[in-house]
Image 1 (tube, rainbow, N blue to C red):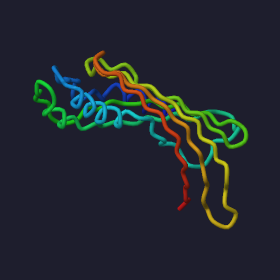
Image 2 (image 1 turned 30 degrees about the vertical axis):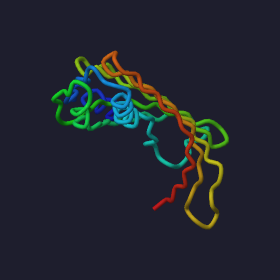
Image 3 (image 1 turned 180 degrees about the vertical axis):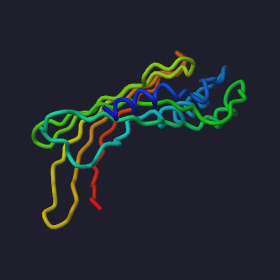
Image 4 (image 1 turned 135 degrees about the horizontal axis):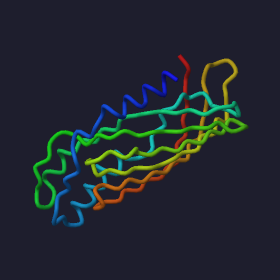
Length: 167
């Protein structure tokens, strides 16, 4: 119950620090730079415990704050004057399945005024645990999308091989 109250207080007291003010009149190379900045920042991130959730009962809920530096947008197109960073929160829901497979879905909660809607998900498969060394090998398939002020859509996909060492 305490965690639930923390989540409610977290989202009630945090707001976006900058609205999206995208440059106008961009050429093709400017649009590529814009997608590089916004697309990389909005990709799905694995922020869960590296140990597989497994087929246990229940699910995992996570909250993260995403920060994308947007000062690099100043030199693009009609040259806006934006400073600081774009920030928004992401909610992540994870559920473990049998055979060390975990699924995660993430999305932004509605925040008035920041112009960002992002979503994504990933599937993680822990396929090898070392017997004499506290490490785990995992394969992660992920995808995400983000919409910035109904002007730019960024979509990312990927496949990652991850080795996690427990400390």
